[in-house]
Image (cartoon, rainbow, N blue to C red; front, side, top):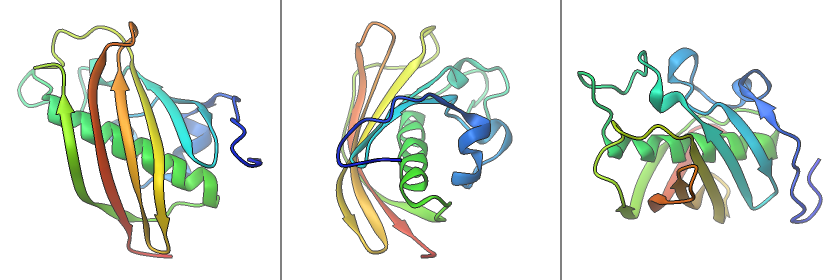
Length: 150
C-alpha cells in the first residue's frame, strides 16, 4: 500500500507484476521492481543481455530500445497504483538523450527510474532515466502514454 510519497521498498519479481502489463514471455523486459511510490518507480533488469531478447536485430540491440524499457516501467507503475493492467500505447517520446551508442558491449544491469509528472483520466506523462551499475546515464526522456481502456 502506498501512502503519500512514501517509497514501498519491497522488491517485486516478474511473477508478482506480470498481470499488470500487456507483455508476456521474453517480451517482458523488466526483471524486478526495486521500489515505488505514487510518484515514481525504480526497476532493474538484465534482459538486454539475453540471447533470446525479442528486440535483437541480428546480434545487436539498438539503444532506441531503451525507450521500451522505460515504457514498461511506466506500465508497471500505473498497474501498481491502479491494481490492474490498463492497456494503452506510447503516444509520444520527447527530449530523448542517449548517452551510449550501443547496448552490445554493456554487461551491467539496467536501472530504470520513471517519475509520473502528470496524470490525466486516460493517460500520463512520465520522465524516465536509465543508468548502468556504475550510475552512468544511458538515456533520459519524457514519454506520454494513453490508455485505451479505463
